[in-house]
Length: 149
Image (cartoon, rainbow, N blue to C red; front, side, top):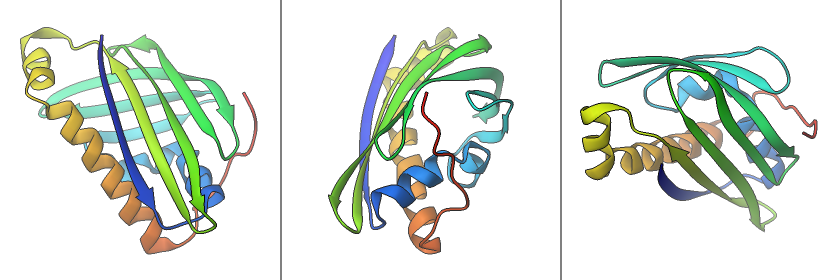
């Protein structure tokens, strides 16, 4: 398994950042390579991705969700193996540090090369920067799911 950890500071309160992150169907607006996410249940999502011409479909199960603190997931079926955790840390009343930890199993020569060359790390960093732009340009979340898992 490979691992990446990246973070971004967003100029919104922790509640706003967390609430937006729970809107999984909005991820294609800021995550490069994510074509679609369908929320099947409160804890199950179906992902359709295409990264550099390599399409994948998989299901991800939310394994832990604590409002304003963390969301953890793992894949449970499909063409990708990954797990991760995103945490939300208030810096002050209007600024939040969003930290993303992700583990994945590269498949094949191309994915292993991309991993070794730092492509995944750069993509995750870019996704977080786009999340920052997305939420800061709005100033408010597009929705929220405040349940605990």
